[in-house]
Length: 145
Image 1 (cartoon, rainbow, N blue to C red):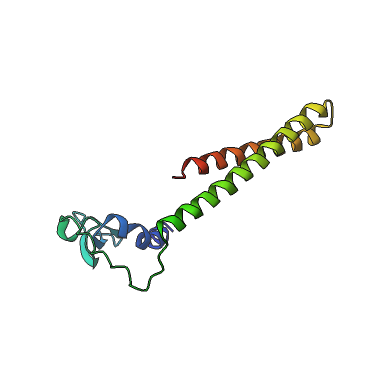
Image 2: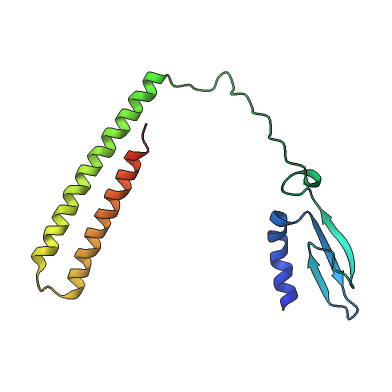
């Protein structure tokens, strides 16, 4: 059973860690697939690939940048600024709406008093949702230029 589990996960795990895959068999016939040659076992190379850091441990060179095609659509700086301003206005509006919704949910929770526990939990969940949305919108607004 262990052999089957190792055999299933080995092809997925090894490319990230190893450059050579060995099949090793010991004196009793137990087979082990590994990325390290094991002493006291007969090992054969199953596959060999370049190491993750490059060929033979040398640092991998960066691929040359592909030039942008001449017919690739371009946006002017003014157009991009306009789009960014529109995006900020939309996010500001959403933030105002979520803030109002959170305030309404907060008031509804305060006014609920001694309602059943399930109703109170639903009100708490609604308030928590609005608060998470507010935090997300603030974070998004913080990333704008």
